[in-house]
Every structure is written in structure tokens, then in C-alpha cells.
Amino acid sequence: MNIVFIGAVKFSKSCLEKLIEINFPPVAVCTLEISKSNADHSDLTNLCNENNIPVKYTSDINSKESYYWIQSYAPDVIFCFGWSRLIKEELLNLPHLGVIGYHPAPLPKNRGRHPLIWSLVLGLDKTASTFFFMDSGADSGDILSQKEVLINLKDNAESLYKKITHVALKQLEEFVPSLGVGDFTRIAQENNNSNTWRKRNEEDGRIDWRMSAESIQNLVRGLSHPYVGAHFNFFEKKIIVWKTKLVYNSKKNIEPGKIISLDIDGPIIMTGENAIQLLEIEPLLDLTEGNYL
Image (cartoon, rainbow, N blue to C red):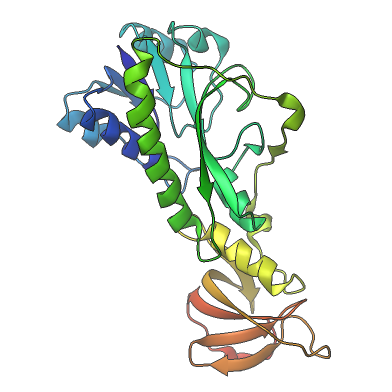
């Protein structure tokens, strides 16, 4: 079975390593040399060179040049794992088995952008690891394999990324050998049960102290490494918050954003509901400069 692989993030690299490990190395790989949009970007060139796999940089997977290069390797299937751009019909129709994509969410629910981040920011207690056959829509094609992934309160973006990757690699071990012999099932998505998450922007990562402490904690969890971090401004300086702790506070006469304690582990800030302790911030601050954030 001829597999062409498309990907450019850390998850892509893990999947490519797994395919090589289970003796289904791609016949060719497309990747990105640099990326301004993916904080977890990974150039797959070195891994390909180490394993004698032809590799091509492309910023436009739908270009004629990319199409003809992929076509020259006569793919039976294309794996597109960790590529933020939609694939157009011509390339989707090239391999007879189709193009298989990946989405870390329980499709048809939670289609769209930044599913790992949104699942944490919204405080969900579970998500999923889903491989599906790509079509002209966004995350709307038939499901090939889906496994539930539980989220606990200690999870942040880094730990959930690892959890989801671990589950996905097990799925690859299960379904890839079956693809070549046609032993797989396609499950159509129930579009009536779908929703689509929007693309996040920098303002979505700004901490508003009028939010509840729980909401702020979820925001910090969702934007922690390998992503950009939640942030607030202090005397016109942007401060990144990587880790926090909820602090119960029943007082009703303290306004949100006020520093109520300079604890040794980090300052405790009043929020719209309860308080929150800043355990890890960058850069470090001398909060004796003021009483409010």
C-alpha cells in the first residue's frame, strides 16, 4: 500500500514515526519548513532523510506542483495529520482509498479550529481522537476510527496533547494494516449533531479578572505549552501565565483584579468569583509596584 503523508506539527512527527515502526513507511512526505500559525510546528525533513523517504516542502498542498509530485508516487491513500489548510477536490480524489485526516474531537461534535484548546478552555471532561475520510467540508467526512479521551482537572494543553497522541498511535496500529486489504468500515457523521468551533485570536487569550477563577484556570490550562500561554497586561507589559491554582474566597467586597496576597508561591488575585494564584508567569514581576492587575 502506497501511503503519501502530509503533516507539519509534533503530532505529525509522532504519527510518521509510528508508521515507520509498524513497517508502513510512506512512499513520500509533504511538510512545511516554517509555520507562523502552528506553535507546535515540526519540520519532518530530518526524520524522512534518516529513513530514506522522499520529502517535499510545500506551502500550498493544492498547487499543481504539489499535486503532480504526489501523483508521481501513485498513492493508494493519503494521510493528512497536522495540516491546517483544507485539501481541494482534485487531491482528495487522487488516491482510490481517499485522504484520511485527523481531528482531536468527538466528531461530528466540535468540528473546526483549535479543538484541543477549546476543550480545555470550556472545561470539558472528555474529548476524542478521530481519524476520518476527508471530503470537501471541514471535518465532515466519514469516520474511520474514534476513541474517547478523558480530561481531568490537572490536564493542561501539554498533558492532553500527550494523551491524545498516545491514543491516536494505538489507533494507527489497529487500522493501518487493515486499510490495504479493505478491512475497514466508514461511519457517516450525523450532521444534525454537529457544531463548529471558530478560530481563536490573541484577544481570546487575554485574562479578564472579572471572569471566575475557574474560567481563568481553564484558559491558562488550554493555552499552556506547546501553545502561546494566556496573558494579561501589567503597566503596559504583557505577562504570560503558564500555571495557576484556584483559591476559595467568600469575600464579596473585593473588586476583581486586586492583589489580595503576595504568597511565596505566587500572588493571589481576586476574580469575579473566588480568587486565583499565579504559580508560573513570564516574565517575573515585582508586584509591589501596584495593588491591581
